[in-house]
Each structure stands twice: as C-alpha cells, then as structure tokens.
Length: 457
Image (tube, rainbow, N blue to C red):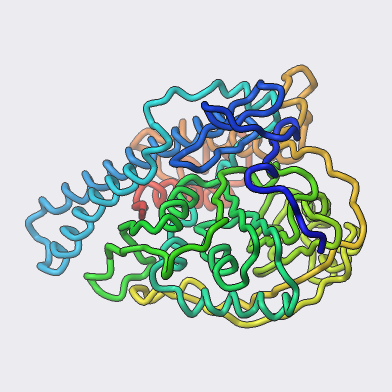
C-alpha cells in the first residue's frame, strides 16, 4: 500500500461539498465557509447539515429523558400498592432508583449536545436530502456498550482473532472503521494491529461521546438493564466502563454518517465495515464504490459481521456469493473469507444470549471505481413538494387499512361487542361478518397489547 503523507485532520472533507476542511478558532469549516462543523467534547460533528442533525439528536435526547421520568413515575406509583411481595418491592425499588440515576448519567454524558440549544430548521435536511433513520435512537445499541467495555471479553477477543485471520501479514496503515458503534473493535484493532491512524466513525452521539471519554482514559459509570435478568440484583447493574489499557496515539472518534463519509478520496489504506454493509439503507454496490473511493491505491477493505440484507428491493438482499461478486465489480479482488461461531451479547447478568456465525472478508483495491452519487435519503417529490406524489402500492394498501381502522375506532362506544361491530362492517360491504370479527379482534388485540406493554431502558 502507498504510504500516506497527510496528517490528521488534513484528510477531513465537507460531507456536503467534498471540499477539504480547515481549522479555525471557531472549529472546522469548509473552504467556502458556508458550513461550520462544531466539536462536541472535542469530537468533530461532521454531518452534511450539522445543526439539523444535532437538532434531531437533541429532540431524541429530550424524548428519552421524558420517557425515563415517566418510567420512574410508573415504578414509584406501583411501589405504592399494598399487596406487593417483598421480593417484588425489592425489585421495583432497585429499578426505580436505577432509572432515576440512569437518567442523570445519560444527561451528563450527552451534555455536549447542549439540549437547550434551538435546533435548525428541518428544511435544511430536506434541501440536502439527508435525515436520521427514524428507527435509530440514542439507546438503540445501548447493550453493545456493556459488551464492549464491561463483560464481553470472549466476544471481543474472538472478533479480533477472526479479523486477524483474513488480514494475515498485511499492514493496516491509515485505517477507517465505518459504523464503529461503541468502538471496541476499532480500539482493539488500533491497540493490537498497530495502524498508523485509526478513525472510528459513527452517527450516534451516545456511542461516540462515550468512546471519546474512554480513549482519554476516563472511567464512565452506566447502568446495564439485561434483557432477561438472572436474579433481582441483575435487573439494574451499575457498570464501570473503561479502556483496559491507555490508548495509543492517533485514535480519533468522529461523529458523522457512513453514507456521507467526511473524508477526502484516497485518505485511507484500510476501511473496516463491522456489521454495516447489510444494515445501511443503501444498495451494497453503492457502498462498495464509496469504500473504494476512500481507499488509496492498493488499499484494502475488511468486512466483519453476519450478512443479513433487508432492503425493500429483494434483488438487493444479497447472499455471500453475490457479495463476493459485487466486490469484484467495485474494483476489488475477490474477497478472502474466514468464518467462526462467536458468542453474541451474552451478558453474565442475563439469561438471554446467543451465538452467531460471523464472516470476515478481505479484498484488495485493484482499480478505481466510479464515485457514487451522494446519498439521498428522500426522493424529489418529498423534498421539493412540486412533483406528483406517486400512487405506490404501499400507499394504496395503507389507505384502505386506515379507512377500516378509523371505521372500527368510530364504532367503539362502550356498548357494542365485537359481533355487533362485525355486523355493521358487513352492512357496509367491507368484508363478511366472520372476516370482520377476526380482523377487528386482531386489530384491538394489538391496540390493547400496545397499551399494556411497558418500556425498558
């Protein structure tokens, strides 16, 4: 691989324009000066529209804190019941105290988000066709934090060992980990495989800000709430998270989007994608072209994780064989592969855990791939509002379902039974009485269960 001469942060680029970023007393900005990129606790926040993205994360933080308050109130109210078992009271008391403390610990860790700061207009997101995934929350990968930095030695060591198998004697050089999560694999690679530079990029501020503190040598206390606690004392456990050893120089957490990576072309000798290419909402061939673009001549791509594509287009839910073929079409050699069965999220405090058959792949860049278009999360008819809204099959189906659900809701008056409601639906010729009764029952079961279901944090 070619030796790189640029130094951090000279490889940083504006994710909106692709221009090189420059340091100013106020922080990073692009050469044109249109965009300033703030630092959060020293971590550069390199979203295409940083204020809009950070504004969304602030909104989600605010909602999380409100939900934790509500959860603590529910626990407190339940503790007021007289007929509780002694063990039940002990469990609820533990959870109530832990929930209140958990809220404060998260608020402290995420204080660099500056919750009180007013968010930028949502229209800026639309103009750039970017948005945060609606199913990703600050705590979406919360359990991974404890796996990475508290009890996951077996999984962490097995992951690095499998990656070593495909790396062999190759040097990593300047290394980017796309979708680094809580950062343990990136940190282990940096500590044990000695890249000259490691950049760990993720879009979740909770994970990135925690990683930044750990690599500085801080100890961070956070609660673990296991999925299936083994005992009352395991329902809420205060863990002390820390890096096992001092972090080598040139390890840099970055807050940004893997679909718009904020780096100049050819900046890295190695790009690692752990549990990423099958998770991102973008076709794999575009991701591989983007990875190729980030690599220097003769650089290498390392994949780690399972392959479980789940896109709307079934043609893009690739098998292993198809993924290997795609790599060749994106300017890489056919990947070398190695597989192993590894433990996955096996907390010692939980009865829940499983094993995963994980695959590691290594491919060398042998040709330049055409730069892919910048990722757009939304189509023009949503962004501009001028083009006709297409009558998609999903819209038609939803329209019919919504009409039926609204009709059912309007029939609920505290007097009618399921059979009464089914008879009225038959009169409206929406469906037969038997079909209607089963449909109404299923719909109301979902509503009832949603109302009864508690939330875990």
